[in-house]
Length: 384
Image: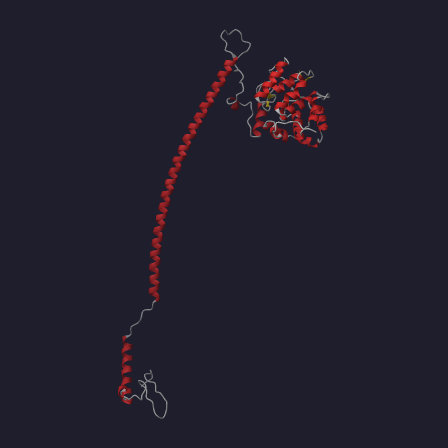
């Protein structure tokens, strides 16, 4: 079976981030995991869906049943045959409405007119919103083509050339080329379509890290048309020079934009002053750090030099202590010299002078006898 020609976007990014995250995390969508076939999802739409708004009505927070089932269809990637079965279904108009929504989000913008044209004048009545206001299927389909906002959410944008062709085709069929309001107001945050209290929207958006579109902090930067001031009365006719609502809106819009710009300039100047203070403080810290490091380096070098001097002096003293000092005992020397002289004198008396002897004698202080080889050692300490 041939699949529908799509716009190429992943189904996770087709819806707005806040709405998509709420659908995926909802308990009802988790229960839909048990639905495996296309016909089971259709039966669930027939039994559970009573409007096709993205969010629940009243004070309930969370995505609507219709959009949970629409997201279920996103994950199933419907074929051309299945889509024709949805658009021509006779059991419930909400089954058909979910099919048209699927095409508006998934199909290629160039093929939308081909899909929608047979149903442009469809006269089946139903209530697309939770307020119970009825319209025909043909008007609903035209609003899907012409409108960018759908009950306070955003549709994928249709390229300008394609939109011009759609408008031209509607003019040829003598049909209106402006949205009728069956899918909500043309701008976000309208009182008719924003069913949930602002606090609920804010909590849903903040929990997923995205600002709610209706909050005052985003109105100044939003290009959407702003509502008239609270003091303006549409039924007041007695005032002769009443200002036009459009002029009042534009003045308020541009004054708010100017005040936003002024606040932004003030914040930028404050940031510049803060950067200058940080830079000066950083320079002071670096200079102080360099000065302290130089001081520490000089102190370290002084300590090293003193330590080296102490170690050298200590090594010298140790070396001096290790070397024994010779003791000069002049008395012992004189005694030893006298003993030697007396011994030499006795030897001379006994053997005669060694210098006067002949060459038959070999050395000093020795005398070789012809009868024996005995050598007499002289000069001993026990010599008398």
